[in-house]
Amino acid sequence: MSIDTRRQTEISAHPTLPVITIVREFDASPDKLYRAWTEPELVAKWLGPKDLEMRIDAWDCRTGGSWRYASIANGEEVAAFFGSFHEIRPTRLTQTFTYEGYPDAVALETVWFDDLGDGRTRARTESLYNSMEARDGMMSSGMDVGVNEGYEQLDALLASL
Image (cartoon, rainbow, N blue to C red; front, side):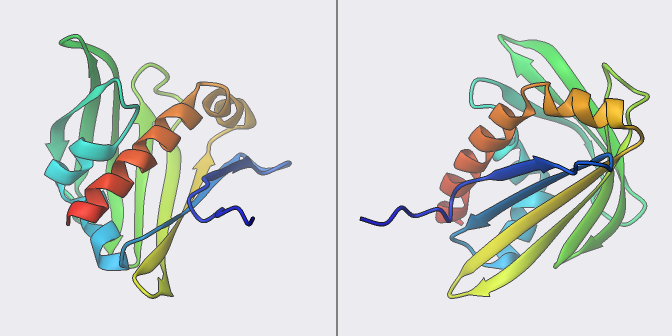
């Protein structure tokens, strides 16, 4: 019996650089992934852990635009993030990412949508942090739960688009 590893999320930290890489395949075309990553009403449906609501406070998804969203539990804001969009293309998005609780750790993130054919796409995200300490802090923050649960929610959303 073979194991289908296509939906496993790979999260790794570069051994000598302040970089985190996330790779995951989806049963959707690149244009659907692009929509899910750029349309605020779609982003709010999948981003983050399952037990938190996502509130989009600002979303100007264009090169030079900015964004802010917050994670909500029981009606209370538990975490907030913000950044600027640096490049918006159907095949690649680049933005800054900052957790408001640790504003000195700004990351530059790029996500690529690699067309695998047959309606499948690989999303590859590379986040460059301003220090090894910031990278290690992110890796130990529990972000893997939010990424994995978010991508599971994204699978369901993509199936409905």
